[in-house]
Image (cartoon, rainbow, N blue to C red):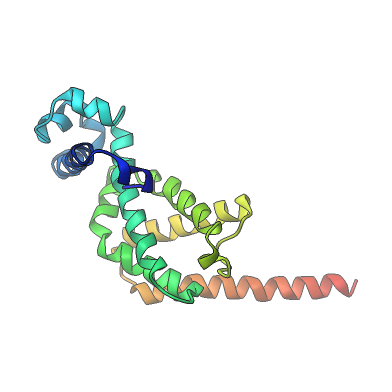
Length: 196
């Protein structure tokens, strides 16, 4: 649920929640591609008119549901003080570990791309938040944020596909080691360039 929805009628919020949960329940029974809006409204015990008043597509329902995960994650990470890149990454991997069954459902139904769009949305929103300005993983540069979102997206996807064999801490260290190695290599390249 986004910030703007806090002002929305409680009945609307309840309907949206029921519709989103209905879609997720149906995804347990059949492939996402085979689910219709009619089935979603019937499963939620709501009229199609109510569904269409809140969502125009099945994708919009899924995005709404996934958006709730990201809002939850941002609340968790925002509650921490003096956030480091380690804090951000360990919280990220611990959070998605707890929700790995849902992420697996997205992968299995070939709708995991929904996470990439929201990764980018939230990384960009974090870039404008003073609390996160010292994190090297987030920038006001849109290309850097696209790179970061894509890297995290693929790392999360591979981790889930591998059955989360590595712990959240191991995943955090893999990402941190990547950034540390790249930073050292960049310093070496820059110093070599200056010597030319």
